[in-house]
Amino acid sequence: MLPESMIVSLRENIWYFHGKEMNGTQLEIERTTTPEVVGNGSDDVGSATATEGGDSSVHEAKDADGDVSEAPSEFYQPGMLDEFGFLKSSKASGTSARIDVAVVRRREKKWIDMLDNWNYVMLHKFDKIRDRCRKGIPPSLRGRAWKHLCGAAYHMDVGPNKDVFDYVHAHPGDPRWVEEIKKDLNRQFPEHEMFARTGPFGENGKSDLFQLLKSYTVLHPEEGYCQGQAPIAAVLLMHMPLRDAFYCFVQICHKYLPGYYSAGLEQIQIDGEILYHLLKEKSKLSYRHLKKNSVDPVLYMVEWFMCVYCRTLPWPTVMRIWDMFFCEGVKILFKVAVVLFRYALGTSAQCKEYPDLHAIVTRLRNFPPSITQESFIIQKIIDLDVDEAELEKVHYRILKTRQMRVKHPEK
Image: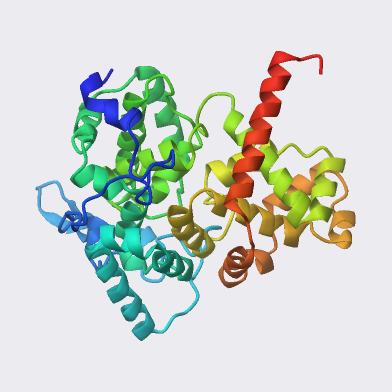
């Protein structure tokens, strides 16, 4: 168990989030540039590795005499990997929309300028950050930007929690959770260069994944480990070093998706009901079809929301969704879901084609490429109007209804 003095601010204090406390009180932030960690992974612009934020030295391996040599692997033959580090033959493989190199460089310069003046820009020009996240964060800066957007950079560099990772990382962890984590390591993106069973990255990637998940269970021994956490941790490690990924992971679990990884999936069920309320307004046909066939939101919400769509959509689309998710929060997950329902089960013809529970669930696990393509779905998400105040009202009503059910179960 961590000493209380070490973790009190991690678990009870207000974590930095968009420059504001989550309870609505303004958080006081110094208008100085947040110190950056120089030369670590994704903070270095222009990394030459296939994976953003990786260290090119891991392509080398020591032979029996201790000399460094290239590690032979069919996995790394030229042309085998896509731009995200996946085997081109894998389901997750994809290619981002082509953008002129000059445009990419301009965007990189703008992001570097924002990151170097983050506190001021976040407090006074948040709309600009939001708009640039919607356009897509430049791949070379994605990991660094995510750290700032979620507030992890503050905690790991200057906040009172900067030494927490060192402690939890050194702790061996509860054997019960350690065994559960080890069972899941080989299941996380085995066709990605960082977690592949062959190739020089695989074991190091899985080792970092284990350490991240184990460290979180040390921080939250009462909560332990949930299988839905492993894909989230893996995506973070594709873009940044272990320590950086840990702090981003804590932010996701604490502030973006609180309660998602606790036993009982109660928060998932609550958000499923909120999604139904949204569908009733935004996509009436799909709402009626789901209700008619008693499609429980848990059947799709676990994979969609808990994994932030990284198990559901093509990778170029996933990256764009994560850019917006880190900037705008959980409402992005709701917007993605509404768009998917609108275009997968939003017409009378589609409802007839998928007439029962089994057919609907199959449809929700196998979307046609036309509606998951990056350019299509991102624009539909941006155009979709979802009122955050209305989401809060719906959430409040659902919680009150649940409380009444507990007090008066006969009703």
